[in-house]
Figure 1 (tube, rainbow, N blue to C red):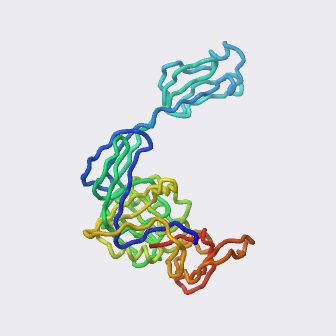
Figure 2 (cartoon, rainbow, N blue to C red; figure 1 turned 120 degrees about the vertical axis):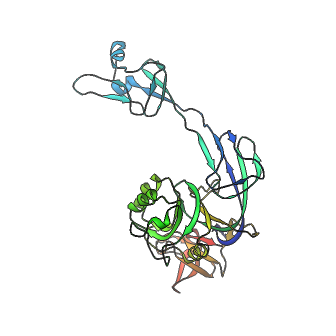
Figure 3 (cartoon, one colour; figure 1 turned 30 degrees about the horizontal axis):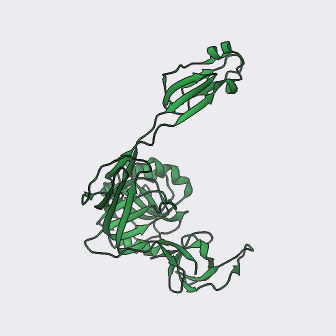
Amino acid sequence: MQQVPVTHTLALTNIRRARMLPVRGQVHVRQHQKVGAADVIASGNPGNEHLLLDVRRVLNIRTAEQLEDALQCKAGDRVKKDDILAESGGMFRRVVRSPVNGQVIAIIAGQIFIEAQSQSIEVFAGVAGTVIDVIPERGAILETDGALVQGVWGNGKANQGMLLSPAQSPEEAVGRQTLDMSMRGAVVLAGWCEDPETFKIGAELPLRGLILGSMTADLIPAAQSVDYPVIVLDGFGAFPMNNQAYKTLVSNEKRDVCLNASPWDAFTGDRPEVVIPLPADGEPAAEVSEIKTGKIVRVVNMPFLGKIGVVVETPVAPVTLPNGLRALAAIVRLENSELVSIPLANLDVLE
C-alpha cells in the first residue's frame, strides 16, 4: 500500500523538533534550558556572496577612455542597492546599477567585482519547550508535550500568545470588523480571510499571531509583510477550516499557543504548525501513514481541495480518472456524506 504524508491534528502528543543552522554558527541555548517560541536558538553568517558586473558589455564600451568616463565608482567604495556604478553618455543614456548592498572589491578590464553584504541567519525555537540536546555550532533539539495542528503555508515568523477565537464556527471569516482592542497581544483563530487590511489592523493592535483555515492567494504579500506569524492550515481560497483542526484549537481557547510559521520544506520536514503545550505526557506521532479503510484524510487538490473525509474503500488496481490518466485512488466519504474517488497523490492523512 502506498504511504502518504501525515498532517498532524492531535489533542496530545510528544513533540521533538530540531532547530539547525544551514552553516556553522553560534548556539545560544544550553541543555535542559526552557525556551519560548520566539527565542533565538542559534545564529550564524552564511558568508559573503561575490558578483561580477561586465560594464564593457552592458554599455557597449570599446576603448579605455570610454570606460574611464563611464565608471562612477572605484575599488574600495561602499555601495547600496541601485547605486549607479557606471553610465554611458549620449542621447540614449544607459546605466549599470548595483544589485545589492556591498563593497566594490576590484575593477579589472571593465568588470566590477562586488562583495555583497551578508545578513545574519537566526533560527527560532518555534515552540515552548525544553532543550534536550545541543549540537555544537549548529543548533539544538527541543521537546514538549501538547496539542499539535499542522498547516500548509506560513509567513516565516514565530511567536506565542493566548489563543482567542472571535469566530463561532469554522465558516466565519476574519476582517477589519472582527478585530478589536480585546484581541491585543493574542493569537486569533478564524475560518478564512480575503481582506488585505486585516493584516495591517492586526499589526496595529498588535496581534501575536493569526491562524486561518484558508486565505485568497493574492493576500500572500500582505501576510508576509507583517511581523507576527500567519499560518494557513488548509490551503488558498475562501473556504472553511477543517472541523478536526477547528475543534482541537477551539477546545484550547485562552491557553498559550506557539506558532511556528516556517515555510513547508519537504527536504527537512519543517512545516507551519501550532503547538499548545499541555501538562501531560504524549506519545510521538508517525510522519507517514498508509491509506486504509477508516483513515481520516484531507484532499490537497481541486476540485475537493481542503475537504475532510473517511476512507471507505482502498485501491486494488489503478483506475481511469476523468482527465484520462490512470492512478491508484481511494473511495472517500466526505463530511457531507458524498462518496468520491480521489487519487492517493491528492490525499494526506489527518491523525
